[in-house]
Length: 434
Image 1 (tube, rainbow, N blue to C red):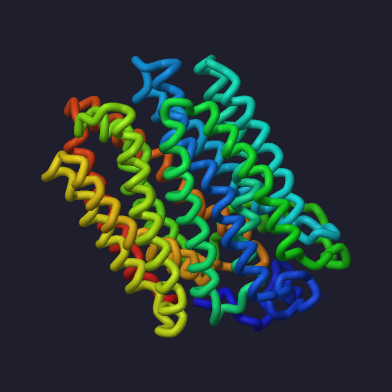
Image 2: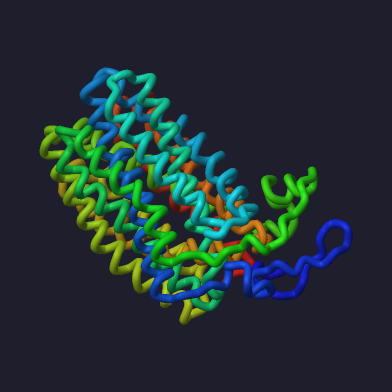
């Protein structure tokens, strides 16, 4: 299989050589590598786009539903996850492809990140101002749409602007930012569990600065001089379709990520209800437990996420770390099945935090190294990110179905464990990455 970072010209349909690989066009903005500024931008961008999502998805939105539709909250969480994630899945691919095709003085990625930041913030303000369940669903879908206009181009900068030998390190920087956003936002959001609308204002302000900050801290070079491919059916197929050549490892990575997210999200998306309905904590105490869990996961994930990326660069190995981290998260997911106590969820947070930190850092680097073509990096990474949104669609659906069939959350932990273990097994057959 040809390596996605190769510099040998590739043949386009029709026989003309493709000379637009990452290292072949030094003036197209993709090799504009400023280590400190780019690292800082990746960290902040990752934290500021995903933090508002997790704050709302894991804490504020369930708390808001508790206020406006308490009898239907479990089914509504699943509905919001499904509808929002379908939008996110499609938006990630479309915005990724559009950014691949964009020519502007700000480069390919920044214009879409700025648009996404403004749109996501406006959607969140609209959501917090309504008590209609129907409008909550509509505005949540809009939030997901614009959020992915930030996420897809931002992640593509790893493939665009970071040399292959340093992608583990910069994947760790981005991963640590993401983890800081995931768990730090939940710590903040947990203090608004009885006043979710106020918390939503905080995160609407946070998301509106995400794209502009990245564009200012680590600006791309203008790419207006880069030739634009003429519009044709072939151009649309190359830039919007799923990859079909040299893609075996790519689809193994996608499948592994899908199962990892599905397994973890089947618990994360319901942690408030697990604490109140399975463990029996009052709502206010559950909010405090969520905050403590998030703090534990933040510390462990930051530490292990920060060191695992550079270690994978030094060892020149990705797969073993990804597989091992999936095993840790699987072990963590099983523990609360045996002990239905608040402290068991803290143990879960500790072990899962270590595993998630390693996984997020190293898996991103692995993803950039199984891309079929560097010319469609954002689009192909957007398709890979379908695993995240697909997991978000399926995870709550699985949990809701199990709770409906069994009347409780106990079996959810067993199913989640098996799914996460399977995710690690799918990484092992990958051939192009060690």
